[in-house]
Amino acid sequence: MTTFECTLCGKCCMHAGGELIEVEKRLSGRDFLCRQRIVGGTFRARVEERFLDAFRDTSESRKHPSWCPFLRGLPGEKEKYICTIHNSRPSVCRSYICCTMRIFAGDGREVGKVKGRRSLVTGDDMLRRCWEEGVAPLATDDDVAWRAEVATVLGRAGYRVEVYE
Image 1 (cartoon, rainbow, N blue to C red):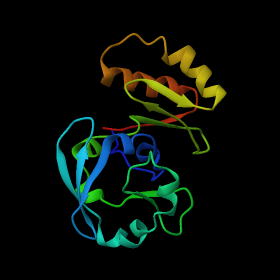
Image 2: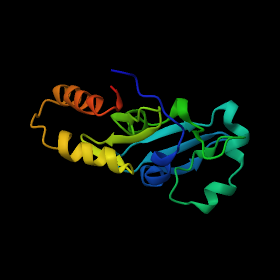
Image 3: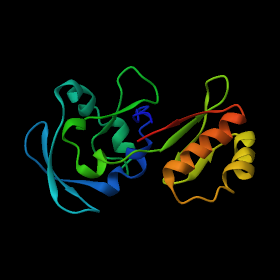
């Protein structure tokens, strides 16, 4: 298995961030007392020195109140986002992985991913058909065996699969 590597798309923090983290109090220019809304408890968030300038730019985050209050655009990069408190992020964020598997076409393009336990997300009709015909019928509850079978089925169809821990 491969270690998961974030692509900096920011979608996790755009769709769930505001529901997970609430700033209760600003303690200093870069320190905040925050509450984890779902799991409860508080934590101290510290904006990292290298992200201070990006954090101060609130233009995009003001337009999107549902975003995590610490998500910012990566300076100089379109559609790339950073967690400005990455080193002090709460446990709910540390344990989150947006997908357990990425699926690539023969030319190297990412054409799908598996989210949650076994949910395919794709806009690729050929992959969707392959999934419905070859993967959906797999009848094992063992996740390790299932991932190996998925890799075999998709590999035969010309796809490359990365499985994450």
